[in-house]
Image 1 (cartoon, rainbow, N blue to C red):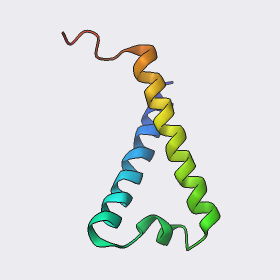
Image 2 (cartoon, rainbow, N blue to C red):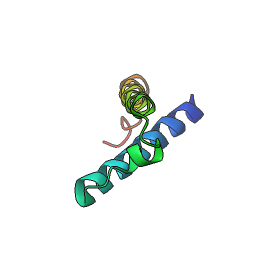
Image 3 (cartoon, rainbow, N blue to C red):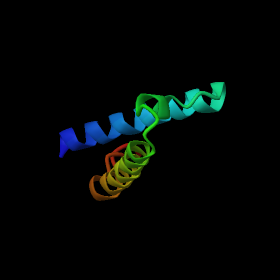
Image 4 (tube, rainbow, N blue to C red):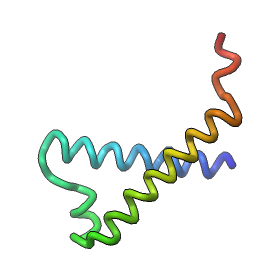
Amino acid sequence: MKYTTWIMSGILIFLGMCASVYALGGFNLLLFLCAGNVYVYRAILSLGGVAALWLLFWLFAFRPTRFLS
């Protein structure tokens, strides 16, 4: 479970960096890395959605911030 959370966090960080390059420079880095294949591009974006849902589940199920208060 720990490794899954690390992997999903890495995926979201990578997608966030690609989105930042696209927003600031106008160059779609993720589409370039997918070699222009739209199906692979959409599959990676859907993997990002799954990663976000996993981390949302992890935050509610394990409450890593409950001892901060």
